[in-house]
Length: 363
Image (cartoon, rainbow, N blue to C red; front, side, top):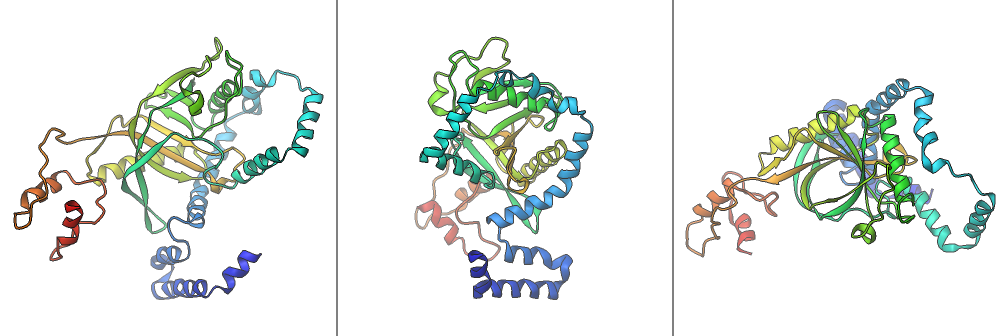
């Protein structure tokens, strides 16, 4: 209520609302709503991401319900009922001991509060994720009047525990079974009976033939010497090498139809960019999911990713920026043939000065 009061009393908010109303009056709902939305909910804010996810949920929720209709109640609960993690009987004394510890241990209480807050965070704060750096961006499709941003990420090597999944799609029993298998390994059903911390994201890789596998990233402290999986557990430990990936984020639910839409949007955007990137395997897509199943739907962070590589003549001799008084043409030809993914200063338009653009290369 205090935050709402601040918003109502903030003169800048009133000005933005009036400006948005003015745009709608002048251009109408059909043409004016993208600018009005951008004025009130700018790109990069939590509210804007919520709005985009809520828009996507209009398609995703009916798709998820259709998927549920195809499965019988027996299918929905079979994987959890047959899991090794549910076979151990509950010890009442252990439950009481855990509750007593929670009532007196402030550290445990803070951890529980943070876990509860993660249910409304797009990216949980308490979970480890593979290290990467963003080395470029590509414009994606227009959403609510603005192009989405596709990140080109350079990932460091990391270790995963993975399991093969029978065909059936993201929302199928196969997905639940894969998650349960990997969670059992991570939480102590392994040769060392060693419990490890949960990480993010959970990744599901699929190809055109319908083959799919799910993977959990292992914590860095366990990556070099992970506990061996139990025999017949269907868990495999693998090292994922450093690689370059193009990644497109989306909110809401990762239904099969939504994943296919996002895959096509990602590939189309990479094709249209005309950059120096090439998709290594157009039929293979990885879906990254960052949140607990209890996270509110419009706050869920999902991503689709494809492995890419740089193309072009890597052996060509680079042309240095010219000294004062020398011609810039050889250098400009090099730039036109192989531009950087995202120069700090964009090239000038027709009739504009090249000096601000060229200055970044002198530096």
